[in-house]
Length: 358
Image (cartoon, rainbow, N blue to C red; front, side, top):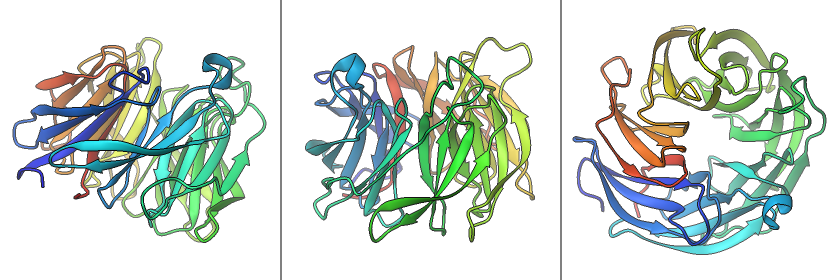
């Protein structure tokens, strides 16, 4: 067991297979201190992590491509012990696509969904009783494009997220300017498209976060630096956009939204801006709509991902271009202050708090 008032934090990054691609830290929830515990090398570019709720298993993308690295994308499973920290790889599966960039476990922990960015496809894998990944059970390939000839020349599935208390998965496709809604068969591990929610042309939906009620969805649009609020029908999967707010000020340099997260108490939405190098914070009102509270420094360069601590007092930011994870305190309104600490993390890409017990 970890000491009281501490959590296991995992930070991944773009690193070679023999580098510290995934690092473990003990995070002191009282002081904001990160204490290194060890690393898990062995796969190239473990850019996104998913942590199983039972506390024993970890999943990581291997964000590679056939054209660039002569190895198609993959996803790997690892067994983990928390205290003392120890980890070992269980197995790896090909994702049948290039540059897998996002993972999501279903609420039962029996299935893992992987988004292949460059290929614009989504794959499903069963999770075995030992935590390893079985043969692919489902696969969907998107087709089409949108208006940005450099970034939207084809489909780019950027995330797949399970709807709470509902049988649907929402796939944000940056290349199509669409939120593709799938019905998930949790017996067979397959996806069936049932509809789409449109984004504005050129918006580029990337990651999504759910309102605590599960009836509203917040979408971080990478290309136009906006957050869109959608109404969601948990019975049919229908989506309707009803609000759009900007995540950077009017005079901001070229910037791209990365991650979006709702705080643990459901009061705020957080968004990271790469280029402007900031976090934007929005208050959620009683109707689910957003009002911007602040835009503050991320404490480094190119905030690719971040995690808000379970007690809502800290934000840990993976600043990719400054090769670090940075600790920011959150005030009573949920607004980040200046950095109070951090740790080196080469090519930092993803931060995850682990609440499971091993």
